[in-house]
Image 1 (tube, rainbow, N blue to C red):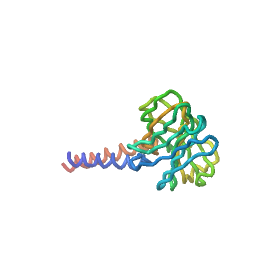
Image 2 (cartoon, rainbow, N blue to C red):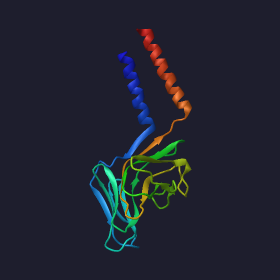
Image 3 (cartoon, rainbow, N blue to C red):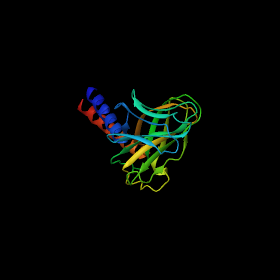
Image 4 (tube, rainbow, N blue to C red):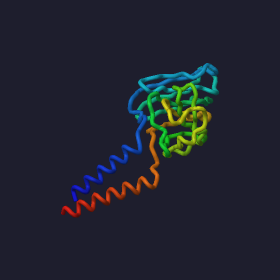
Length: 209
């Protein structure tokens, strides 16, 4: 029985490793960028492979839009009368070409209704992007996700080398995000093969006892 438990635990670990990976859990920080100027373009802050982006769309100077990584989350914060976008982008090599490959992120908190969100991928280092399109921001405690194969835009979806996301705030809105990740939704046949393998191991174990 102990051997079977070890086999099952190993199978679960392998499954998790094969089908999902955290891109950023926002445990590395602090990092921040602030935009207080209208029409001046986005402000950025780059640490390692992560670039934070903030761009204010409405609000008089010097009112601001902040994007901050702290306390294990990415926080987008607007001053009174301000709206804009905040997000993060990651350089590197990414295997997002698998059938069923999905990007996801947890919405930990938002204080006001509204707001939109988009996942983004690039195959030319960020010169052009394909996106998930605008996703309505759900209530706090929910997850946003999008299937990469459904993204629209010029990026070559079999050669992704940059990924990211953007939160389009409603007026005065603050929001926090965690666990930006990629995962594959396995096809039913994959689960069937795994189940057959586990049953085979169980049968072999019973014969030895």
